[in-house]
Length: 259
Picture 1 (cartoon, rainbow, N blue to C red):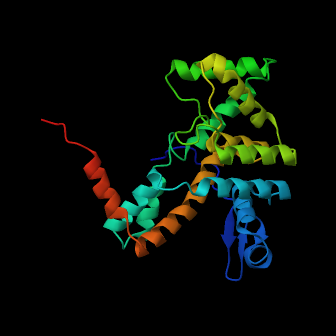
Picture 2 (cartoon, rainbow, N blue to C red):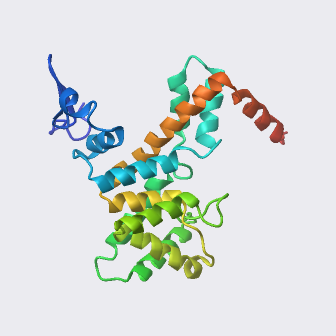
Picture 3 (tube, helix red, strand yellow):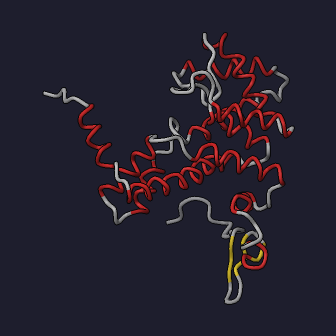
C-alpha cells in the first residue's frame, strides 16, 4: 500500500563509501571534524550551508539561553524516569524531551509560526499595529495564550529575552520578526487589557528567524539545547539522586478527593 508522496527518493544530508563520509557535500574527516565547531555543524546539517559569523553567534546565544532553567517539567520527568530505570539513560533523556510542547519548551516554535504568520499579513499594506492587534484578538477569541509573552517567575521581564534582544540591536539584525514581536508587545495593553513581558520563547524565534534559520526547524533549537541540560541532570542524578524525593514530594502535595 502506497502512503504519501513517493516520487522523490533522495536525501541531501549524508552518504558514505568504503573510504569516506560526506555530509552536506563536505568530507566529514577532511572538512568538518576538528575544523568546524558543533553549533556551525548543527546549522550546516539543518540548512545545508555553513552559518555566517552572525548566524553562528546567535545560534550559540539562543542555545545557551534555553538549555537550563532549573527543575522544570522536562528535567523532573527525566530525573524521575532515571531513578526508576537507571539502566535506561537514553529513555530518561527521551522522557524529558517528549514533553516539549506548546506550553513548555516547544512554545518557541508556536511563537515563531505566529510571528511569521503576522509578518506575512503585512504584505497587503496593513500596519504592524493593526496586524498585531488582530492576531492577539484572534488568539484570545479561541482562549489561547499569546505565545512568547509572560513568565510565572520573571514577571518584570525575562532577563534572557532582554539580553538576546539587546544583542540583536547591537549586531544590527533586527528584521521583520523582531519588529513584529515589538508590535505585539506594544499592542497588548489595548488588545488584552494589560502588558506582558517578552519571554525567552518569544525572543528566540524572532531572533533566529531574522538571522535566517528555517521556521520548520525552530523546535530543534529547544530540543538540542535541552538535551545538553538533561544529560547534565542525569549525570547528577547518578551521583546525587533526587528523583524519588520529587516523586515523594508530589505524592505528599496532592490529596485524594475521589469516592
